[in-house]
Length: 107
Image 1 (cartoon, rainbow, N blue to C red):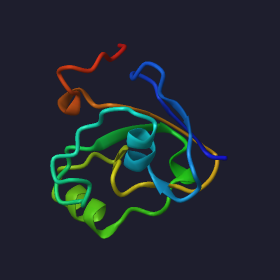
Image 2 (cartoon, rainbow, N blue to C red; image 1 turned 120 degrees about the vertical axis):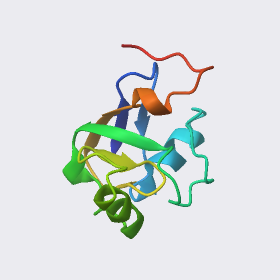
Image 3 (cartoon, rainbow, N blue to C red; image 1 turned 180 degrees about the vertical axis):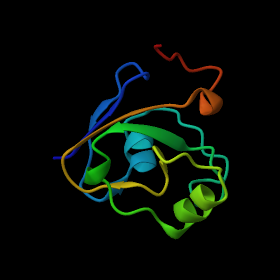
């Protein structure tokens, strides 16, 4: 089963159903993750910095390409509501700009 690890979110080492979005996996495991547009790819509040395993994710969606072209999504970032973990292991981080004030983050 694919594995998702969020390095700066304590306890976020998750087995993910193949093809699930990162946001669905995180919410399904009980983690609070910012997603201002409700997970529809209409903002960049759910972005995740991919540190390793980016090739294990499905290709960027049209929304991700649009935000990357506009400079609102860095080359190493994906939208958690759009990125689907297909196989293997992905390691990521919650960017400082999208960290929730009530959530504890490491480093």
